[in-house]
Image 1 (cartoon, rainbow, N blue to C red):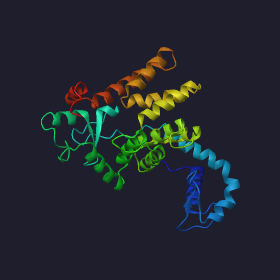
Image 2: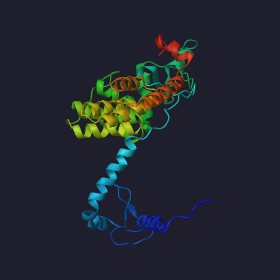
Image 3: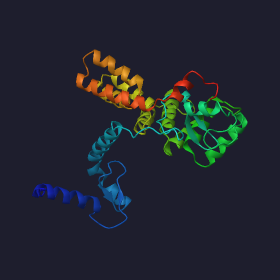
Image 4: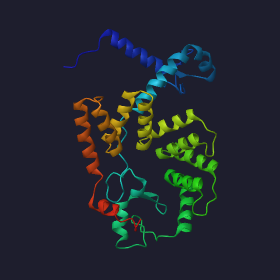
Length: 303
């Protein structure tokens, strides 16, 4: 039988519910209250109330916002996106997948090679005729106009390096990466972070580099996570580094597992945790394998 909550617990719940349904400054309740963008734990009926309450709320807001950010940073990300043809998780390496500008799909190299070995001239997914670089760029621009985040990411890379007859424009590329990331494509945030780190198209800003790397990590980008893990290890935050590598290894990332092997050899990781992550890595890695992908690894002519 379910036990009734204690009087103290019930009072705490009532207090939390009341806080979320009333203005933290004036106590007004009703619809239309806006949540604090930092801590997400209090609400206000107007900007004036928020400004009036800020001196009392500032310290708690920063602490709560930091806790929320930390929780998101070390949360196991959702399963990787699947190839729409074979329905297996997409591989980590960029060269093992390709964006199809005709249909906006990201396909694994295994499926592309398997289809193109029989019929080279059609898209493996939508069956649209393949085109040269100029045709690909035209389709890419149409996808960008439709707010396709992966198309924006690809156009950003093209613009950053001046490929396919597109003029090199690092500032425009940074803008495309930002828009792509805001639309939900996490790798674009990492590219933007790299722009801030190397001052390509934007002024060098280490804080923004870290910020966008963390956003990419929270969005599920494994390269961003490994970068944060390495940076944490280098400044002595071993436990944070281990958490990042553990998450990456559980996703099937080989370099994350390699890092944990080194850490385990120095007795910085319990044997039970290492054995657990070995099993998780094997399961995730096996899910990404197929005969077609193995064959494609040694035959990139059809990509």
